[in-house]
Length: 297
Length: 318
Image (cartoon, rainbow over all chains, first blue to last red; front, side):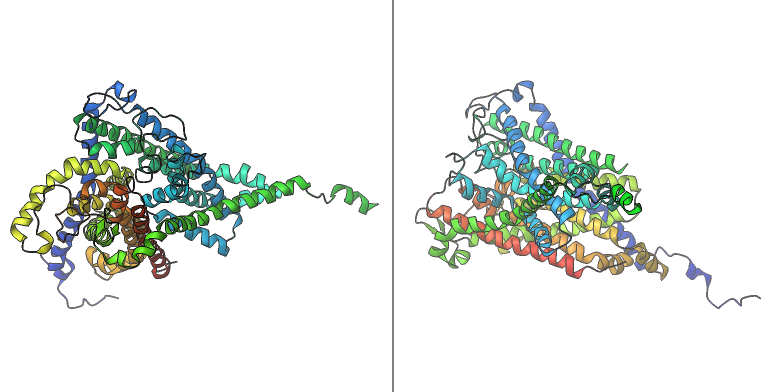
């Protein structure tokens, strides 16, 4: 049995680079490569500039001193550094229990009912609420009404505004993390007589701790850099923090306030604060990646 | 005899009341915590609406179409800010979508080794982590001075077009648009990349099998298969762009008068709030809250639309 060779020239089996479609192909590939390069360039420019500018102005005293009065030299961002830590901590106190609790409800108890669908929808909408709106909301709810023991602007108000922004991230990652826990673990725990509470807290939650922790760290990293919710909730203060019911300085608001000042010393401090903030946030992001990578192993 | 022994072995024990109480309490607690999301969302609308009611009564729908923003005479209209919000985000999207989707295609095709693609991918995602206030600082001191000569060149050559009719000398729409592009790129790239990765490889193989080139199969097979997710991501990015505050506030110039030129100082709703809220009192606070309400409703519509698109238009492959 032999096949009779059909009558076509074998050259049609060779790729012709000169064809229009092959040229267009090469051109598009080059275009995509260019776009990818352009997308990466801003990161390199921003990071490089912040690091170079930041390191050149960095000195140990910057971490322990107050910002100088306008027109004077020197000083530091000590109060803002503490302020950022305090406000972020307060926001965690509000957002983590609510977020993890809500996530537990969605993954463990809801069984996909209408209410759960509404909560998931609400979470997605809340994730899209502009950060400045969170600030305006807390201003109207807490600051202007002075409900927190008669205090208007305070670190607690700032923390609440940040918590509104952290909440959706934490709920979503908790929900998704818990869904990854194998159903057999729950059956096993319930089978040996554990109550739902014990099953959830002692078996399911520990099994999902890595994705939840990743989500929390990412949420903290985002909220540490947020400025808009803080400018009229936590406000600013040129002094050391005087407790959580008083206005206090944060690094992000310090950058915003000092960037537009006509004084060299303030602008220098803004760059120093940017450097510290960027290093902190990138560090937390890499840490979050490490946690999730650690869990996958 | 047999029966009693079995009863002794397997007594049906009831759970203690405390056990049930803890279970029910826990269940109620997490349900309440989940409900808090809805309550917060509702409260945001109610609080902003409540604070804005005075301005809503005073200005009604004229607020959206009027360009006067005069705190001295207490006459407020937010058209300039609404126009600025939409203009900056749409222009930023026009630039960021081709760049972001192109980058996503580059990262999902096998042009370069997987190792390098992961590195680029991670770098773009880290860009999303940089606080917007830092990007704003960078925009003031690096980006704006760098692009100013280019903008002025465009003004010299194409100044007869109304959009380029003023020289660029400092903050304005265009630098704000560019810094928004930097902020939107990671969002669009990450979402598009995930959507493209989910397209089943069979589709690509089938396209190659019938003789399509790489880019024919990308444009006619792979992109259409992933388009719903990509559009959803673009809508999310649009919502983010309209709500973006700090970087835009620092570089847009915060002018409350209307100007058609893209090189002139302008304003967005978020920037208006960030700038004036601190020093406002009386009707102005209410007017600012009204502007916040408008911003909330716009972003709400955009976000719900994004979710709907992803849900309804996605092609399902099993």
